[in-house]
Length: 437
Ligand code: ADP
Ligand code: MG
Image (cartoon, rainbow, N blue to C red; front, side):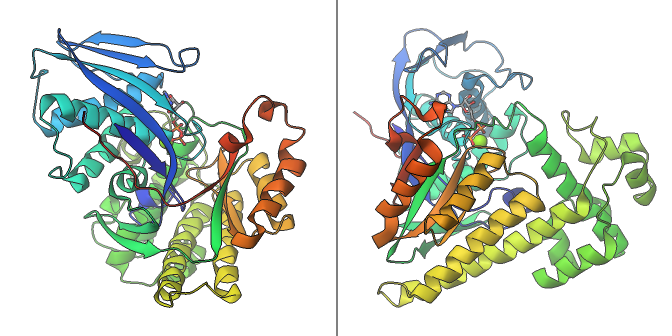
């Protein structure tokens, strides 16, 4: 069984309800699955030095400790999600599950290795508890299930990563919309290549509070704006997309409303409690998470500004790709320049409004400009990990050599690694695939 992985645009806006435009990439988590004669789960990782083996009886409750994001917990998220979906209180088989796992998705690097592992857990479980017929399987339901169950790890992510891994089609990106989940093939421009460059700074999203901090800042921005606009049910409008739909405004209008109603100074909890007319305890219960309830500062203006402008850029990117795809010839330099510009703008907003970049990512994006890329931005949630750059096909080797000489040459972390593991071109891959022998 193979689960491939993704991603091209932004996972910061999926949890706000906005559509995204990812593609599956070629690196993958690979799992070999077999049955055990007794009711137990055995996970063995080929990279045993980093990822220790794990074993548990399947007779007991699946308990996922979100204080410690051990690697096997991601697999358990998928397993637990499937059991819940099938309304199984106990493991339904007399046989257990053994899984040998390997992968070449750089971990904790914004390429959604976590969701690849969650999906591996879900598909492996399905192969035992329900005879797996991949074609008949409803991949939409599975994507929604995996998005929900990855939250057991403690991060309150959206559904982009799981959706693209399960809905990808080779050769194109996917426009993915949520609530309800739906997708559409989007052709990518001919004549340009996507290059992934790993900064080699890792960031595990479940180990820190930054990821959920942004999630709750967006929730608070949404309800505070909704209240300022006197919308009914404002306290429930926790997603910025739901707010926009209820307010019946365009994205540029929403950006103006942010400037009108939200100040740029960070909000404190007492201030929010007063503005939202609810106790601090109530506010924590409604909008904060276990690992964000002790935070004291919330930058609502900047976060909402990023989300609305990013949603606008994603829609623009898709419009340009679809338009250029209809022409069935190499995209014009104006088209490629427009796409690249959107990627640079996106990175700027991630770094300055969302503050989810990392000095090494900023350095890579800056070097990308100097090295001839049309555009570049961080991938996934940020805080470390990779950038994705759009490069003219004829200039790809030149760009890769430039980054090699100016970024990786003197980086001790890069020594001893094959350069193809941290700097590579990728075609849109097919996403999760199951092979039965
Ligand atoms: P991302 O999804 O951006 O790669 P996350 O912080 O969400 O980063 O998840 C990274 C975690 O996923 C790693 O810390 C590790 O626990 C797990 N993981 C990723 N790849 C593997 C692998 N090949 N084997 C085991 N665990 C992995
Ligand atoms: Mg992840």
